[in-house]
Image (cartoon, rainbow over all chains, first blue to last red; front, side):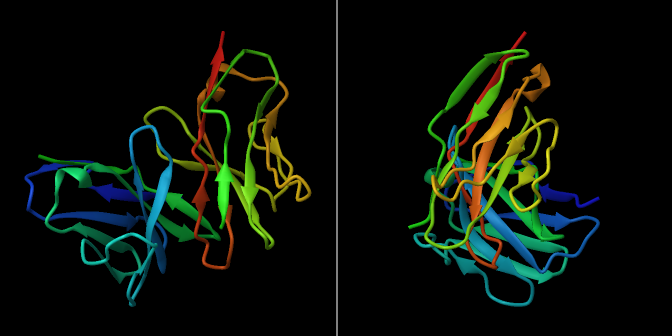
Length: 113
Length: 109
């Protein structure tokens, strides 16, 4: 139990376009999900906390207009990278809070050309 | 500021040798500490948390508030323990996690 999926697993987009990444809790409901960013050979950096039915809470230094988060249901949160640029290329990981712990998705590799 | 420090990027040991992955944290309040593991080509998963005080896959970790440490230990390493290990700190009821930079454990035959 407690499986979290992400879609797509990898995406390549052109500079200036927007990309949406989905995070789903498959067998449990999650009022809270988290979005992380991981640069090569570096740790996970928390970007924002996504709360179902309310606005996301962004960490310091993360542009909320750049990284749009929507948590419209108890099993789905989406991260949209708007007007993507090459420096947005990274590995994005989501997690869902359940049973007092975070369950992580497999991650999405975003490459902006 | 809250911070988690894992001083070793890579720890290489032989099978059967003891292992200790170091983790130090910086937080003035009452922390909750975790160890997460990421095996090759797999997602991050919880290994253990200090409040559980349990041993998972032979690993244990004790919170030392005096030294602000939460080192991960295993008396006899196995090859299947080779993975990336992350120490993480939760500082409030929001369940937000602050991760250390990670230590890659390589257990050689």
